[in-house]
Length: 413
Image (cartoon, helix red, strand yellow):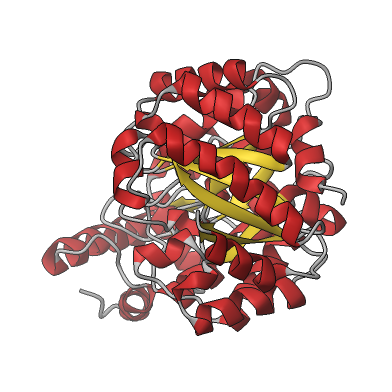
């Protein structure tokens, strides 16, 4: 079996392990099977025909119930060839058999077995110590390979951030020798600081040895999920778990749209960030189409009810908006990138209590009113009064249009 995900990681290309359908369920969201298929296809399309080499779509946890099994199966069948589809399971032979059955026959199918890496987590999950749990992980990798040679086997080490790096490294090497494609280190509780994440991946990688492919699954409970993922990438990791809008258990994890944009919007800076040299596009077989990110994010928001806010990076409602005077004069000076060129988001002037006369004049022109200096000052004063009286920053343009109609006729107040 050709493992295109492992090949990509070993070649230094980034693989996104997409968790919005699986870990996102623990954020109290439920994606119906048809939507999971649609999302998998849309995500794969970000990379065109290279979707399976850049995206592992964690379709679900088949052991949850019969409906979840069928949802995973539907993704495996209907998104085949557009992403690599993965089923996630606990470290039992029954769960492994069920997970393999859910993706069997799909091109580039995978099963990820969750194995506890720390003593506290091992005692809770499997009633053993970490050493025994990790040793059993090797048998589970072999079980996946024996059940179906066409299904890749991966291992997720739960609670890696509180585990012994040397022990995890030795186990990762054993998993790889048994046929594992990748070993994912999970900061399951989102406790790490960036330096701690960097140290963990460096130490585990050194202990695991050449040929072991590590991945990062880092939660965001301290608001550091993306920063910690960058640390993993700087340590040479090329499989990074993320989720659209960051939805995942508790406070979520690194947001897919933020991770992709960070690494693709300025290839030269990304290469510097990751300590790469030479080809600035070496992270990709095909660079992601960033204009698809806002569309997918909006789709996920509508389905899950997770809002896109004015402060959501990359895909939020505040991107490309202008509401004050100086940014209006030179918008590029107040943005780290060009939203129109990179994301396909058109600039938008938003009328607020901070508006200058230039902003009000521009909005008025858009509404069909051409204001002289006196009327511009009067309209600006009206906008500010309106905002403060309402106790809300944004002023509705229809209200401004009605005011301007009265102002033009001499009746405005």
